[in-house]
Picture (cartoon, protein in one colour):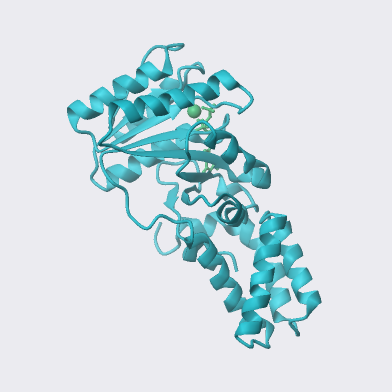
Length: 299
Ligand SMILES: Nc1nc2c(ncn2[C@@H]2O[C@H](COP(=O)(O)OP(=O)(O)OP(=O)(O)O)[C@@H](O)[C@H]2O)c(=O)[nH]1
Ligand SMILES: [Mg+2]
């Protein structure tokens, strides 16, 4: 997409909510209690979360004091740095290791299967061999949907019939990946609510199978969160993490929401990195997360 990065477009709604209010605040006068109260309100109203908003505001206050900043517009530069540093503090330092097994988990309809289609494209563009595993054996037509993405990407798919044991499909996927020396195996899973204990246990089982069957592969568990649900999505991180240790987040549907501020709460309260963001429904609508770029596109 030419000069205009898709992330800039996808963040348009979040930016509208954020920038207008912040521009007004930072163009004003003194850095007094009123200023900080208003900043806190703006952050809370942009889905940053109450605890995170308070901490960010307090940190800005400390930095303003330390740097002897007097003008509101100079405080803006400090705020940007605080936000970028916060996001970067949880980002992984290294690139991906191969062979890589990615398991994609999350509640129903958040965009797991679509994100896998986009991830296949992402890794193929990096000249990696990709195989998909249809681990959602629960929902009718789930494996057909994944097959379509496999076809679009011209990558291999391992699948069983509907109602089969998800663990068995994963096992077969790993055997295939080992035999063919596949670089990236991406496992789709059925959407589930954390209250469905038997389905959550299935994730723990998939995790055990991966660990047991392919010790030399790098395991990466990604939870997909729907950005349009904002703060409400966050408790899912802990619920799923109890069954499968989450390494990172794919934040989808950023293009349809003003709630992008939620990435700050994810970093501060959950200490998990957002690795990718979904910015639309197409094959190329997945962007690697970049903290500086994200914040630069907010205000
Ligand atoms: N606008 C937009 N839509 C998205 C994005 N990601 C996914 N979607 C849409 O969200 C809907 C659900 O996507 P799926 O990939 O089927 O979600 P899922 O999590 O696999 O759903 P289940 O398997 O039923 O749990 C589809 O209509 C997708 O096109 C995104 O980043 N932006
Ligand atoms: Mg799905």
